[in-house]
Image (cartoon, rainbow, N blue to C red; front, side, top):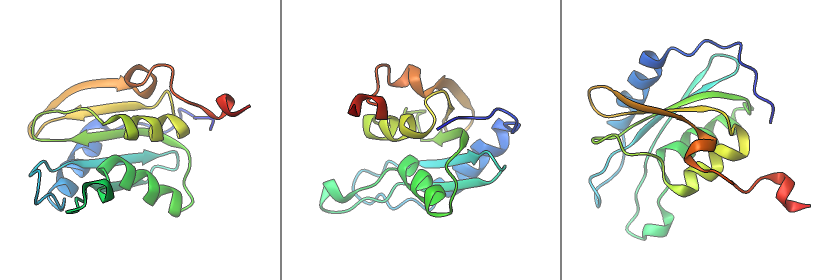
Length: 136
């Protein structure tokens, strides 16, 4: 998808939204709560938190919750995503692939409970990602 850069990224507001939704995470097994806040081209912030399950493969990460929520609301142009964990952990490989599907140059803002710790474009987190062009 093409990505327009006209939407201003308020990193602090995006991280705060991710921090708040992180508190709603369902993580009774790992105790590792994750919150994500996705900024769409129209200025909307779509949030998601991780949801664990006793059958581990049924779990879904915060980043994918936010992205699938955005898609279900008809939004497909993403500007930035903030991910908040207790220790500033980066998104898993599956989340990186899903982000690359829609916005490979999108900044991923990584934060812990107190501050922003890093920022990377999706393509730096997942170089040589599998794209629609690979299906030809």
